[in-house]
Length: 223
Image 1: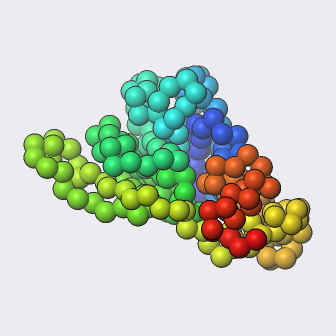
Image 2 (image 1 turned 90 degrees about the horizontal axis):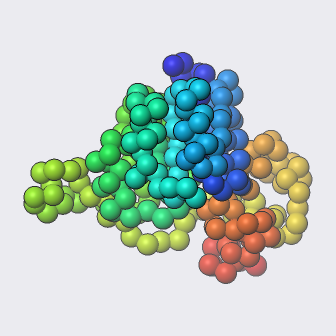
């Protein structure tokens, strides 16, 4: 594997999230390759023909559960690191992921910088659980502590959005197209498109307008 030419396999049934994450990875690894699968069956089919350098696997899939079905994926690509992804993070999930030998866990509320850092670590074969938000490591009580790594306790909290993301949401509320947003913020259009896709997933929205409305309703943005 070359650090400059990694092959990523994204397994997630949310098309907007896959698109946004794929563009984000392409932005940071322009000579890399991104393959997408919308369910476990597609991922397993891809793995019979090709071996990626990193699998980014959603916990909840329409035809299975990422953690429960991890052995089937491992059988196809035993040496490939796996970075789990989930919109809902719990201490139990983190514990199960660690026990299953997952390389890292990526919450879908992670920032772009946290995603890139997690992927860098995973590509290097290093554990990558630091992106789990609002988390504190505590030792599990015996005898669980003897059999498994520490449990990650996660508190409920609203996703923290960057100043740039808040500005983009404001433009979405005004119906501003990506090209105009990019010009106003000094970004390229692909960066804006990736942020918009990422924001809709993070806020549980299905459209640009809904992402703005959800942000306002949650008090993340002033109307």
